Every structure is written in C-alpha cells, then in structure tokens.
Image (tube, rainbow, N blue to C red):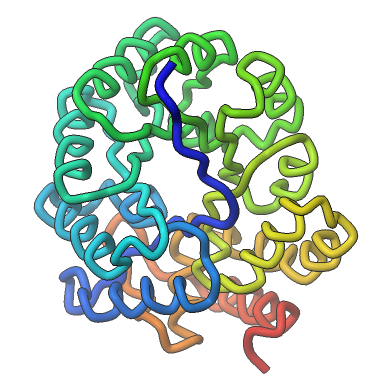
Length: 296
C-alpha cells in the first residue's frame, strides 16, 4: 500500500464569507491568515460549513485557489470536493489537485442514497482520477447514508484513501475502525462536542466548525489530546462546550458566521436557503463566546 499522509490536530472547516451577494475574497484571505497565526493545524475550504451547496462551480474552485495561495504551504489544505454526482466530485477533486491542495475531503453521496457498493464505486472513481490523499466524510445526519466499517476497510486498500472525517458521533466507530485498519488510518472527528471522547478512543484530530471562532483554544485542545494530557483537554472542553452546542443552535454555519461578525472577521451574510440566526440564538452564541473568553 502506498504511503499515506498523516493529518493531525485541529483543522478548520472554513466558512465562506459573503459581501453584497458575492464571495468576499478579502475577508476569506484574512480568515485564513488569522487561523494560521492562531495555531490551526490545517484548513478545509468549501465543505458544507463553507456553504458549498450554494456556491457555483467557479466560486467553489476560486475559494480553493485562494485558500491554497494564502496558506502558502504553511499548513495543509484539504479541499472540499464532494458531490452526489460522481462525475462532479471527480471534476472538483481534479481541480483541487491541480490547484495544489494537499488532500481532498469527499462526502458520502447525499440525497440519492447509494448502497455500500455504490459508495465504494463512487470513492474508487475519485481515487483512480487523482494522486493526492482522500479523506472520506461520513455524516449520516446530512447525507442519509452511513459508510460501514467494512466498506471503509475496503476503501482503505486503495492508494489514495487516507482516512475519515467521522461525524457519526459514535465513539464505538473510532475503536472499530482502529481495529479494522490500524493506527495509520487517519481518524478525524467531524463533531466538535464529542471530539474529546473521539480522541481518547484513538482519534488523530478534528475538522471543526468551532475552530472558525476559537482557533487557538481548539488547537490547544487537540494538542493536549495528542500528547495524552486529557486533564488539560477536559478543562478546555468545559470552556468550549457551550460554543460547540450553540454554534449549532440553528443550522450551521449561520451561528458561526454571526460569531465571526462579533469578532469583526466577516459578515453574517449567508445564501438562501440559509438565513442569519434569530435574536434568541444570537444571545446564546454571545453567551458561549463570553464563557470561552473570546469576548467580554
């Protein structure tokens, strides 16, 4: 099996800032710069958090290019390249590779509900089309399909399948995947609130929504977990937990965008059908930010 890259620590599932209906390049580049300076270990542009469903293909590719250009190889860029059309996912993955991404994040096909064999063939087609690592994104709550441990094990035999962003929130799954594929299989949590348990079960990091807003705390949390200092990690978890919850008080990334607007990093503008959060939710997000020490 070909050598596969190790991805470790806190990776931010970046939001895509908008201004006057268009993608805000200046705010996006500023966000990338701030993330790196705060200690974020990797960047994940144009995932669901980046509102990929409502970006045009041209915008999607542009954001990936901006991220790679701004990061300048200081941290790995894992570009979102998912679609429920295999042909489309292959096209986005090829573009990410050509643009210089270090890896791609590919979600299980949503809405059309493929079988395990269908999902295997989907990822195999992408694997065969590119030469950079692929992180499989398993998020049953959004895609309505759950990639089984058996299918994941089959996929891991392919040269570019390097790991998983696991948003099942199942602690059992981490141990099962570790048993099936060994420690070399990259296991990244896709669920902030349960990342502590995920890491204790043998995870390697988190692709985080919260780290958009609290990059330093999330990086410190991951660092503590990776060195086995779970006492420190627990203290950071207590500090971050209200944020982990309240950034999902309405559908993400609306609460995260509001939080970033409070920090002066980006506007809270979204694209329909996503809308800015209501006043009650705003208060909840603000309280969580105060609890984490991000604002007064």
